[in-house]
Amino acid sequence: MDKIQTALLDGSWIELILPTLLNLGLAVSIFIIGGWLVSKVVDLLDKIMQVRKVDAALRHFLEAILRTVLKFAIALIAIEQLGMDTTSLLALLGAAGLAVGLALKDSLSNFASGVMLILMKPFDIGDWIEAAGISGTVEKITVFNTVIISGDNREIIVPNGQLYAGTITNYSAKATRRVDLTIGIGYNDDIKKARDLMQGLINADERILKEPDSVIAVGELADSSVNFVVRLWVNTADYWAVKWGFLEAVKNTFDENGVSIPYPQQDVHLHKAD
Picture 1 (cartoon, one colour):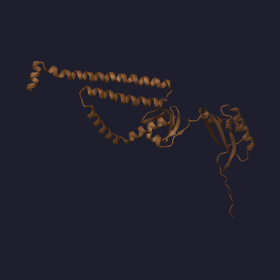
Picture 2 (cartoon, one colour; picture 1 turned 45 degrees about the vertical axis):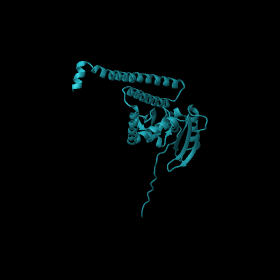
Picture 3 (tube, one colour; picture 1 turned 180 degrees about the vertical axis):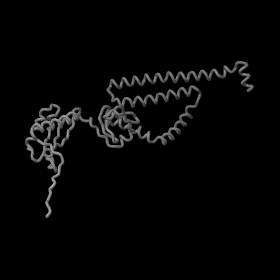
Picture 4 (tube, one colour; picture 1 turned 60 degrees about the vertical axis):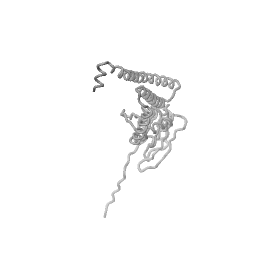
């Protein structure tokens, strides 16, 4: 206390505190200016990758990694300006990182899976996929999770570990898809007539591709109906429109031409007992 009182009285406290205040000011300036420079560098990298048409998911991933590394380096420089031993700090951070890594092994698994998803590219942003028990349009891919928008516009966040570890069905990967339909007619109806009517609908729909050829074949003699297997090739974007439209057209055309579409039925036979 005597030393503190003496320093306050003779003004020597300024010489003691001034270097510390200067170092603190420099450290804060380094951190603020460094953060601004990091943002500029990341923005420049983003523009370069956009010009080179780098995939959006990979672009965001690289930007996140670069931003984290640069900010960590800026923080170390600022801490060193305060006179702290960064070597000891790095050793401490390494030990802490090991402990955190063991505690967050699931998050690290999601991170590794996110890196593999971005590099292997089983799907892109905008693709309609089915994975981890859900289906929808991919909106965003990050290093920890993937955001999927369902058909009824719900946002579903799926950990990357679940996606990468399971089966992924990408409905948007190919330019064309095949529409598979089963259409039944009654046993008393004319098979050739029904086939010709469906072929006429196929020929009239420009969305149905000519190559590969469409298929109309009797696939099953079922309990209540003769079932046709109908296979149509369409552009992926036209899949649902063609499927729904063709089924409606078949029903209307069959009704207009006297072809029945039976429903399940049973014949009951009664025998009179003596």
